Image 1 (cartoon, one colour):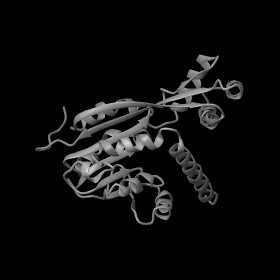
Image 2 (cartoon, one colour):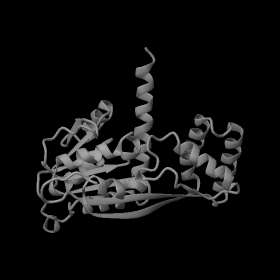
Image 3 (cartoon, rainbow, N blue to C red):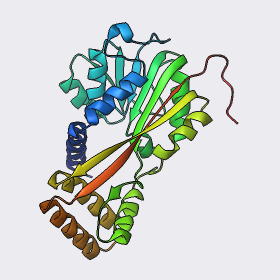
Image 4 (cartoon, helix red, strand yellow):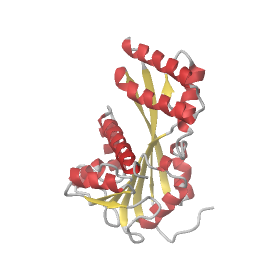
Length: 272
């Protein structure tokens, strides 16, 4: 279709804008730093954990900030993303970094090569998260580290005078996500893939005031698009949220799961 390239361009631009906004949210930089520390990529070279293998892959790297920040820590990092336009953007923004077009199911590395694997807001986009973690096991050297980050799309907490409608809006938007509950399943997925020393943390991003309205508008538009909630009801819900923002009574809390684990030493065995 002749209109498709333009649509793809708009979709990419919207995604980049959303990713850039997420990176500016209070606490986002701290969360990225935490993920690097869990990989063993300390900001202080003297404190860095010596890991087997070579380098770290950032899967679903988007515009590439994490790859650049890992490079600043002296870590050899490669960003992969299935979207060629996103990879092109990352290369323009960070010309000294390594970015490649690839998806989570088929990474461009030989077996047992890497010391680290990072995926931020990726697994919920995949129809088969377990397959992606099997690929992570393949490319990680024994003792290598994996870190997964992401929100649970059914766990958004929103203050509202109509909690039933709020649940309907959140649930309808979650139904548009390929694997909306992937984040709460990180621990089980890692264990099933054969990883050891699995840990899980939850960091909650809290949004208040008018700055949160674009996020709530996105949820509302998704709920309408799903067909599960009438547009009139969603419009009333947004009106309430805007009124809350005007008097500083708006609150949105998003739990972000951070899971980390280690590729086991010894022969690989099939999980039960």
